Amino acid sequence: MSDVPLQKLNQRSAVRADIAALEPYVPGEQPQGGKWIKLNTNENPYAPSPAVARAIVNTTSDRTLARYPDPLATVFRMRAARVLEIDPDWIMCGNGSDDLLTILVRTFVGAGEWLRMTWPSYILYRTLAGIQGASFEEYRFHSDWSLGNDFCLDREGLRLALLANPNSPSGTLLSPARVKEIADQISCPLVVDEAYGDFSKTNCIDLVRSNDRIIVTRSLSKSYALAGLRFGFVIAQPHVIEQLHKVKDSYNCDTLSIAAATAAIDDQAWLMMNRNAIIATRSRLTDGMRALGFHAEDSQANFVWCTHPDRPHRQLYESLKQRGILVRYMNYPGWGDGLRISVGTDLEIDQYLSTLSDIMIAQS
Ligand SMILES: *Cc1c(COP(=O)(O)O)cnc(C)c1O
Image (tube, rainbow, N blue to C red; front, top):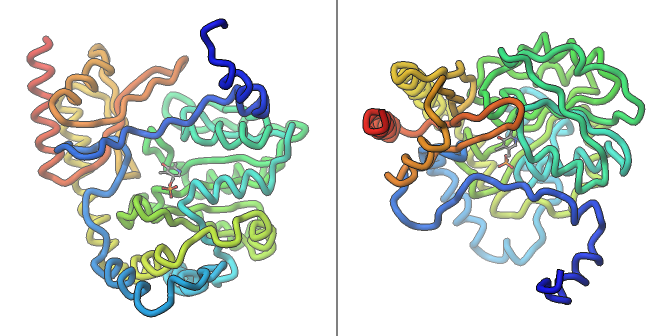
C-alpha cells in the first residue's frame, strides 16, 4: 500500500466502485507502423470503394464542416433502406456497431438488472453490462456451437439478450429459424449482432419485420472495409428506434463518416467483389489449417477459429508474431484456447500458412 501514490488512491475512490472493479476490454493489437501481416482483428484486407474517398473530399468544400451533421444521418438511411428493402424509419446509425450496442444496453437494461449473452462470444458485451451497473449471465454454447434452450429461461430482471451471429470467435451461425425460436421463447428483446452478416449465407433482417423484439445491428467495419471510419446501424421496428434516439448522442455520426458510409453502401458491386474474394480465401485458409492438423471450424464470417489437438496455441501465436504475422490468440478459461485467423488476401494467407508450417516443423 505504502508505495501507491496518494493522488492515485484518491482517484480510485472517486470512481464508481463497479467501474473501478471493471476489467477493461482489450481489443486486438494495432501495431502502428512496421510491416505486419495483420490477421488478428477481422479487418478487410482490401481497400474500401474508391467512391468513399471522393465523398469525403466533397464534404470538405465550402462550409459543410462548419455545420453540425444531420443527427439522423438521413441520406445514409435512405440508401441503406433501398439496399435492405425496408423503410428508413427502421434504421438508426451509430459510431460503429459498438456505439449501437452501448445505446441498446443503456436503453433496455437498468442498474441491477440482467443482460444475457452467450459464451464464448464477443467479450465487449460484459463491459457494456459493467458500465451500466447491470449484471450479466453467459450461456455456454454446446461443443458444436449450437445453443441450448436454457438460453431462453426466465429470470426476474432479465431485460436484454445479445447474440453475435455469426459468432466470434467461432464464425458459426444460428439459422434464422433457430433465432426466431429463441426470440419467441425468451422474455426480453433479442439483439442479433450481425457485424459479420455480409459474409454469411443467411441473416435475420427479415425477422425484424414481423417481430419487434428482434433487433439487428450491422457494421461497416468488416465487410465494407471501413473499420477506421466508425459506422454501423441498427435495424428495428420504428417504435423501438424512437426509444433508441433518446439515448444516443445527438451527433453520434459526423459529416465525414455519414458521407463516406453512404458512398460505401451505394457501391454494392464493390462489396460483393470483396466479399466473394474473402469467402474464396476463407476456404483456402480452412483447408490449409486442416492440412496442418488443426481443427478449423466451418466459418460464415471473415475469420476461422482453429485449434490443434496437441500444439500449444500461445506458442504458435508468439512464433508467428516473431516472424511478422499477427493472429488472435484467445483463451476462454473453462472452454479452452485457440487461434482466430482473419481472412487476408490470398497472398497473405499463403505466406501465413507456409510460415506456420515452417514453425511447426521447427518445433517438432
Ligand atoms: C467487430 C465487431 C463489432 C464492432 O464493430 P464496429 O462497427 O467496428 O464497432 C461488433 N460485434 C462483433 C461481434 C464484432 O466482431
